[in-house]
Amino acid sequence: MNERRSKISILKDILRTIERENGRAKPTHILYGANLSHDRLKKYLDNLVAEGFIQKIEEKGQQYYITTLKGKEFFSGINKMKKFFEAFGVEI
View 1 (cartoon, helix red, strand yellow):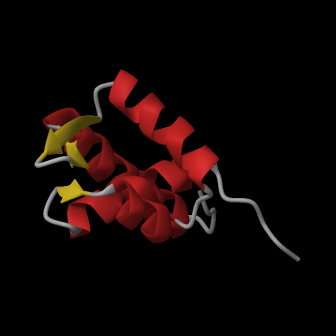
View 2: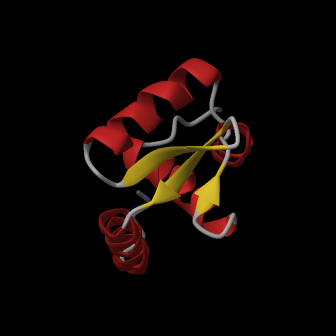
């Protein structure tokens, strides 16, 4: 049986992927790291940019996404919540 990931889980995967790339990742790396289709990735990235969790930059004709301080704090909070819920046998 396939279980769908929660929105929080997807956001965590996106932010984790960017952090793994030293806080700066190309969209393709995020696509594979978060295991999303291109359309779904674009929606999530646009939402994260709008909320101020990540920033879109361009260098030498390449697009990158970087994690903002707000995004790093959010990612840290998600990880704390995940550990808390797992202590009670609940997955988020």
